[in-house]
Length: 239
Image 1 (cartoon, rainbow, N blue to C red):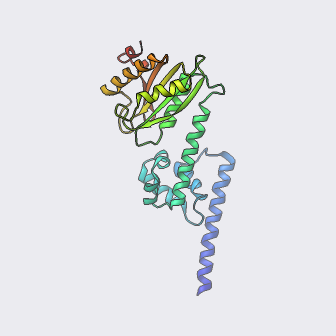
Image 2: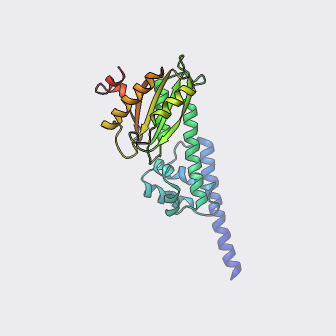
Image 3: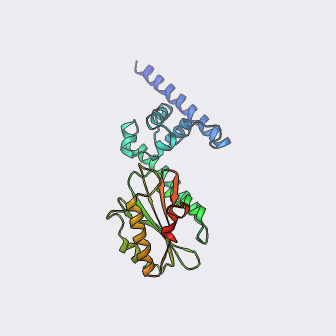
């Protein structure tokens, strides 16, 4: 009896092994060309879950989240609640964060010269998957070279989340000539509130007093990005 059980277990293992090798070979031949989203996720899970049908798990996760991108962005706790082990959920987050890091690096030029289009892409990438508001500051020297890029605060932009004095201190520390500020609206639209506008004006005036020009203020909601200088109704803030 025990022999029969062992044979069944061995057959199942061989079936999974054969399937995994066929999926890997498909990727070797064409990378992800011709893959459905659940097949992409299934392949990723091969390396986090050794002995389980990851095809079924992949379908379940995509159905729960709505899309592959939403699975990658989902919190670890949510992934665990929907069938992943803690290790597998952590692996998915490593993949997602590595991708973000790659894109941020890719969208930076070798000389870090100011490039509006690349900066917009970099900002959208930095805010991907965040469910809380964060503020990013970018500083440039007189030649437009990037001196600093990073999150300087968390919380609602117009509240204590943004410390204007701290922004000015950063600018002075890096001997910046100009700056760009950006923040995200996780559950809203890429348009500033009245208070966002009020704080932006105060920030512009404060930086001006220390010899730093505020070039623009970007607001990001998912993959949509809007700026004060691209909107005629807001442009006067920077005139």
